[in-house]
Amino acid sequence: MIESIERVDVLVAGGGYVGLSAALAIAASVPGARVALADPRPWREASGDLRAFAVAAAGRRMLSALGVWENLSVEAEPVREMIVTDSRLDDLIRPVFLTFERQQDGDALAHMLPNGPLVTALGAAAETAGVRFLTPDSVLATEQTQGGRRVTLASGKTLVASLVIAADGARSRLRSEAGIGINSWSYGQSGIVTTIEHDRPHEGRAEEHFLPAGPFAVLPLKGGCRSSLVWSERTEIADRLVAGTPFLFDAELLRRIGHHLGEVRAVGRRQAFPLGLTLARRFTADRLALIGDAAHAIHPIAGQGLNLGFKDAAALAEVVAIALRAGRDPGTTDVLDDYQRWRGFDTLRMAAMTDGLNRLFSNDLVPLRLIRDFGLGLVDRLPSIKRVFADAAAGAPGPSPRLVDGEPI
Ligand SMILES: Cc1cc2nc3c(=O)[nH]c(=O)nc-3n(C[C@H](O)[C@H](O)[C@H](O)COP(=O)(O)OP(=O)(O)OC[C@H]3O[C@@H](n4cnc5c(N)ncnc54)[C@H](O)[C@@H]3O)c2cc1C
Picture 1: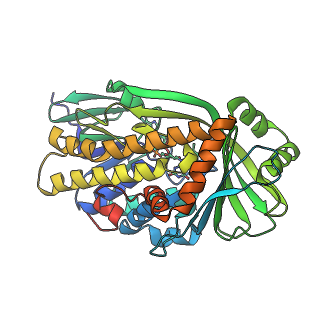
Picture 2: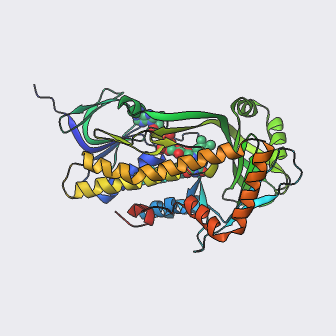
């Protein structure tokens, strides 16, 4: 008996921000493309993730080109200014070593977006573009078969895809199943995330305080007197702070944040995310491409993990769309090699930068402190060097995928 098995052009494993973006970008750029996406959680269900993301200009342009920015912009708070300090926990004064203001073109440095609206906007747009959602379900295994990769889902369903996109996060099952090695280490830190309220308005200012235990970031949210906190601490201390009383949490918060925002209190739940670096040695295998955290999970010190993932989604969607429009197979080695070449260097550069910054700043060694503060002060006084940093954070260097330039594929 001949088995009848469904075929798709592209199967995306993982409906996080990056998997949703890739599925949407391909489906929207190639009418008639058969794109399916599997995730244990349907996009309509709230994930309970308390994070808010600093979306750089490149990511915003991509969301705009995909038609989702218009709805999202009402939820987005522009980051107009950023200050950086380097001090000990109980220092009474926190001298500002570095400031960034909005870009020369008047663009904000980034926009802060809460998790919920971002997933909802991407999910709804992907559904409208014709992405077939296989949710709730997850990819159990994939194997090479003639002209495609056979995908087995937890529900027992199987299908064959010309290309499988692994967007299944830092602990990617598909990556290990394909035998792709990783370079990976833990920072021994966790990032505590919660929302805070303060009496004085933030006025669009983001703050990053380099403290000996790790970076402590206060990021402005919509509404003027609310901010998102990403507070790095040694993991055991972070776990205690998250499990402790609100009183203890707020007291420790105040020691770090100071008094310039007036009364400050954490509202709602708190979460701790263990921090590490995971870099896949290759981003592709037979009919398989890794994107987002499945390819690279980096320290949130510069708020760049998701922004890198957006660029992966845009680059992969572009090479896949070109192949599909020409009637070619999107899972062949030449298509995947183009993707690997495009994203390899940018990712390595950002992974090295965030790793280096975290090692340089997350300590209290006096000689190192003197050198880094001298360096920060120097950067602050040299506009051209500062511009290089601001451009890197905005996602400017290197040839960009069309979506990242705000153009359709
Ligand atoms: C504290 C913190 C703050 C951060 N702040 C920022 C920031 O400000 N700016 C920024 O750019 N980045 C930031 N990041 C990084 C950012 O969170 C990640 O880079 C981003 O979430 C990666 O998205 P993703 O879609 O690749 O993976 P994920 O969000 O991990 O999504 C993976 C998806 O795959 C699904 N999945 C897993 N296994 C399977 C399977 N077998 N089959 C099908 N589906 C599966 C999961 O259910 C999930 O939906 C931060 C990270 C942390 C920890």
